[in-house]
Figure 1 (cartoon, rainbow, N blue to C red):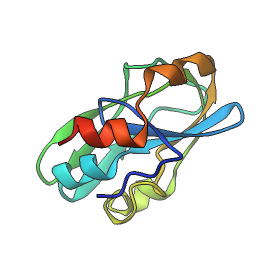
Figure 2: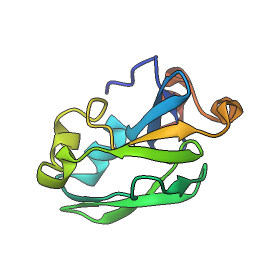
Figure 3: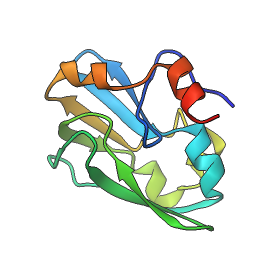
Figure 4: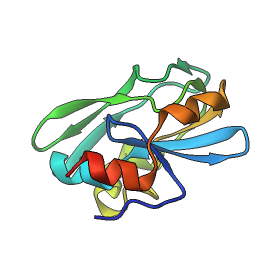
Length: 124
């Protein structure tokens, strides 16, 4: 399974790709493989505040619905509208199919997340 080294990972199977003071957030390749075919993604609204380790949405698949847990805290700047019409894109490329873009409120929270190697160890 692919887990890019340039991302931060949560124990709840979400990732963050940080670019300056913003981050793109999505679910991991492992998570999408466990969920099966993704049918719907419930996302927050632009300008919503999200909090690290708290739910910010839901992903529904052919197997179940699962809460999405924020890897970081901040303000939602953008949602990936492509997922409204093509939620299965997450199954095709979990690391390109980001769910939300967030303005980080505390970059120090990144220290609470896992590296690629640590995440891979956690899912074995």
